[in-house]
Amino acid sequence: MTLSERDLKVIWHPYTQMQTAQPPIPIIRGEGACLYDQNDKCYIDAISSWWVNIHGHAHPYIAQKVAEQLQKLEHVIFAGFTHEPAVELAERLLKILPANQAKVFYSDNGSTAVEVAIKMCLQYWHNQGLRRTKILAFKNAYHGDTFGAMAVSGRSAFTAAFDSLLFEVEFIDLPNEENISNLKSQVSNLKSDLACFIFEPLVQGAAGMIMYEAAYLDQLMAHCREEQILLIADEVFTGFGRTGKAFACEYVSVDPDIMCFSKGLTGGTMAMGLTTCAQHIYEAFLSEDRLKTLFHGHSYTANPVACSAALASLDLFLDDATDANIQRIAENHRQFALKIKDHPRIRTIRQTGTIIVMEWETGSDTSYFSSLRDRLYQCFLDAGIILRPLGNIIYILPPYCISDEQLHYIYGKIIAALEEI
Image 1: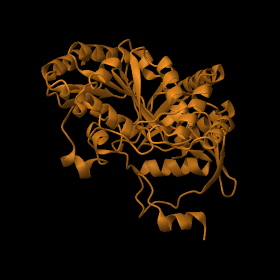
Image 2 (image 1 turned 90 degrees about the vertical axis):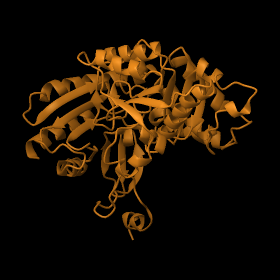
Image 3 (image 1 turned 45 degrees about the vertical axis):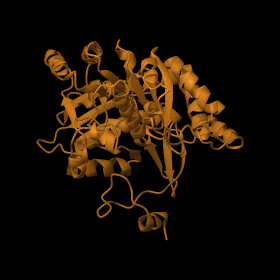
Image 4 (image 1 turned 135 degrees about the vertical axis):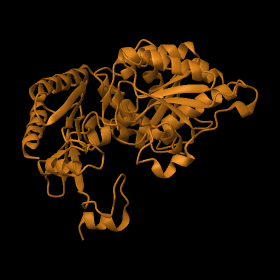
């Protein structure tokens, strides 16, 4: 029995209609920007395995640091105890985050990092005896698949079965020159009810890599700050270099009150999430009254092995060579965009840092469930490229170690697909 056959007998895969899906491809090993199946066929991981792998697969430096940590301490309860990797990671991250970020709360993944942020904001007001329970978010947002994270995400086919169970959220359009004044008025009208504003800075990932200008986000954040509405920057996707800077919030002048991280945090080595906050958020929970405690935690909070992987990933991320690779990828993307922007099958093409997005011209059929999506996905798999279209939208989001040769091979196959599909 093959590995795929064994898999289908026992495993339920994410975001997969198991009745109609093709058998999963068994991956045996990874190296750099490539993954290899049981026949040693190479697949270029052009989406960094769901946006997590920023340094390449099976990176020897991260593997070394993880192995060393496993020989010392694999885990310890994080209530009442601490350990060196957790403290060092918090210290080092806070040095490179916006200056107002003061405390780190560890969790397990991006969704839980968002859950923590939401709970921090709601209880921040509750601890002061104020009832501000509504949350402001962008239309088409995606913040995760747990219930709180779903609630602040845009309503769609993915949330339809649960919509009646999700708490009320005020959804607004992405800011631009035409609507920024109206958005500010909306915020002012709701201010007494709003606990916080959560947003994906610059790029809405799962919505189709929708991009918007930092200048108008900055204005909106500043207005929320004036109205005493807490700001949550969800950098689970955009953090650690994806937008061309270390963090997308570096493009704005207003510092968020709370930030969420996961995905690239450990270089794609293992699951981990964290939420950082400003000092005034933390202080709202300091009290002789134990009922003002932030009642949240996970069994694997601040797992030492995950912290060690994150520290190793941070070492690599802060190396000058990584920044050079980020800028190199961005420039390659820019040149490719110029080359194909006038192609009749391209509706739009957009880029922010290492993220490039092409929207196929398909008439009215642009949904996530478009048949074009499956045809494109299989076409690229056959060519040894892992791309996961969002409906009629193709995006490239590679590990920073990807070579120019590999990038140009991907670009070439996209051009071929434009002619053939």
